[in-house]
Length: 133
Image (cartoon, rainbow, N blue to C red):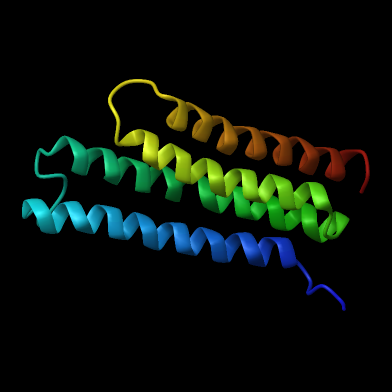
């Protein structure tokens, strides 16, 4: 069987969409439970969940863009699957960690599993553009 073009990016984009819906549910459940119609209503948990969702939205488009560019240039490779899953798992861990006070393992692991793939893909994208056009 032939893999579709950008199969990894397609898969990670779908996974990101599901994580986005999960964020909507997490925020919505706090809103319903606490009667918060707009903003965070001064509620700490609502604020944390909103920030987790915002952080997800801030990081995911850049990651997917970099992933697509690298996959388009190099083709589907096993290491790109690993990078993609690491990012998605990292975003979930970060969001879970955001519910807790202070620094904690899920939050820190989530930050690393988002930042390192973005950094690595950015560096590799630059390498492909400069060294291997």
